[in-house]
Length: 177
Image (cartoon, rainbow, N blue to C red; front, side):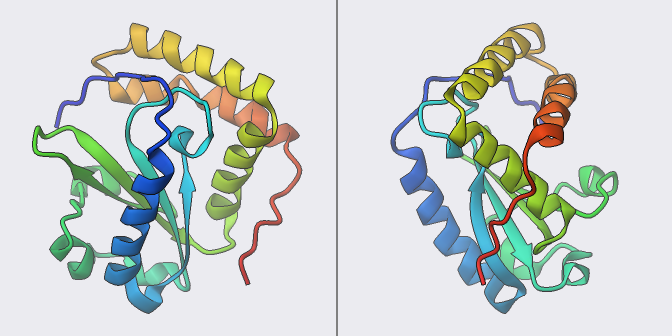
């Protein structure tokens, strides 16, 4: 699948798009999911982003996600097998619109595990610091221009920034119990 990297201005409808996607994901995952959070740049008010809604599902037990879940496939989620074979501690699903362009990502991780906490720490750091969010936005816009046709390099080129933010962020205490 080829997706051009396009970063757009913040869209105030993104939280509602997440809420709708969350309901569908909750229905498909049932008791496997302990919590589902909105992550990624679309979860940060005012931040430009790729118009892709990222959902983070914290699973009661991560072992339940090893194979593609029939309930998610039936609900219209795609499971890119080749990509998932490269992931450690996470399963990835996506949805595309009628044009074939990605509209949603669903990340399945262990609830309260390192990936769960890291995703929330990064999101919360951007939400709490407008200056940090603007710095990230500037980076993303430059990378989108440079790597418009290379999603892997676009994503990999953000790693140093994410690592730096997580290194200075206090541990997340966003447990939803």
